[in-house]
Image (cartoon, rainbow, N blue to C red; front, side):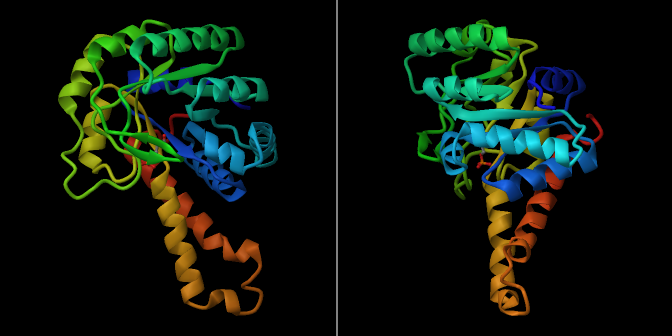
Length: 287
Ligand code: 13P
């Protein structure tokens, strides 16, 4: 069953671990993430960007695929289906389509407008029992056309948004989507500690999980991060494994051209990446 992310994140915050949000792109991605979560008895959040939603033929298709898979694969761990970096309109569409969680990214609006739009969604999500993620301080880098500068959020603005009644809050702390540049100064733990102090029990979300060193992840969790988003790392693992298969000429041997064979190494690579992250985040056995 699809569930809101509220309960899993409240438990994660109290237990000082984090639940991974892994973005999905297609059937193989979704199956790999769900099976790994089930094997490790970990709660999991499936992230869908607006671009990925469009690619997968719309939010209704995504809901149908995920619900069908949960049933057919006998998935028993809590699964949240979450819109990643949604616009206001995108969030409305996902709520209607049957997502169990949405993110409204109003970080590029003036704070007053971010508050106004977030408030409207808080009310709607409460009525429907969905979790809502808000963002303050744009996350750096580019993800599906959403571009940010890697800002550090203003802790007072974080408090204002948290107080609206959102479920979880993404605060920019110098994190970036995609690969980190060699000269990246690292996460701003000073900002994170200040935000954490202001927002109290509110679970914090760390975007741009790809390539953040393990010690920084652990420190971020100790300072109140309870949800960590990973996207690019699964894409890179899939790409490397698929490249290897083709370079070794396996697609030319026997039935190696069969998509179920061609996509299998990439599928296994996503599983291995998700497993590694769940172990690092501490969510194994927490379902
Ligand atoms: P990465 O692609 O850097 O892992 O970031 C994922 C993310 O934050 C999704 O919102």
